[in-house]
Amino acid sequence: MLPDLERLIRLQQLDTGADEARRTVDGIPSRIADLDTRLTTCAMALDAAKQRLADQKSERQAVEKSLAEVQVRLSRFKDQQMAVKTNKEYTAMQHEIATAEAQVRRFEDAILERMLEADDLAADVVSAERTLQAERTETDRERVMLETERAETQRRLSGTSDERAKLTENIGAAARQLFETVARQRRGVAVVEARDGHCTVCHVRLRPQVFNQVLRNTELVQCDSCMRILYHNPDGGG
Ligand SMILES: [Zn+2]
Image (tube, rainbow, N blue to C red; front, side, top):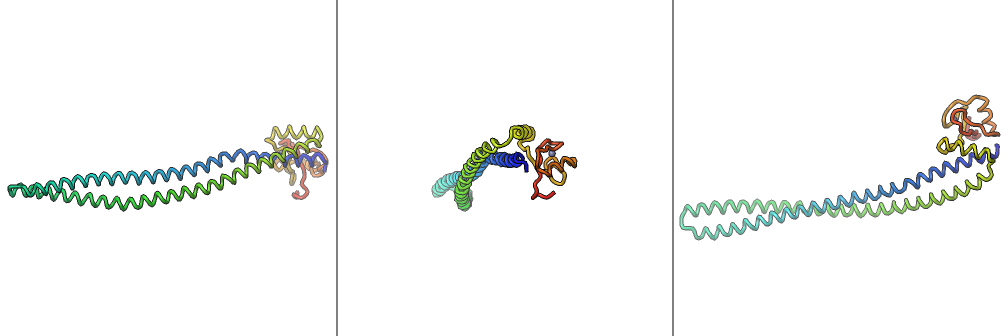
């Protein structure tokens, strides 16, 4: 194989790998932001559960206050009933007492119901706290993994750039120039395989004499259509 072609193939591998590595590094902040979102969602669920419990407690306190008021009224009615002079007054007082007693029962029932609800709501708070704790542990773990991935990828990138610098020193000026020009025009992909008579990237069918040239791997041949530098991979078939 033409030495420059071999070096250009390696150069392309390095550039493609570096592109991927850069995309990985660039994508890490948004993956970290996703972790923050997950945590925030759990923290909000916990706040909401605590709020429901607190609201429910104030409702119960309001009912307890009403109950206390009715009980005060009830005992006043009972005192008054002792002091009434006529049957008519007695009956009227009897009616007030019955009404107040019915209210007492209603309020007591409502308080009992809210106490049962409070148990459920308190359990919800505990469960939301556990979920948040678990999510914090998990996102911390993922955060460490992402930071490790970032550091490793950056280390690989700088290794690549050293290798690239050494490699390009050994590529002829014309070949390097051609590579840079095509790479600029083709989003960084300048060297591609030709297989079965076709360019594997733009898929155009190559003229037979062009493909025969490619098969020899002894010169730099460009695709008629996308202008990329073509090579033949003997292990790739075709
Ligand atoms: Zn092509």
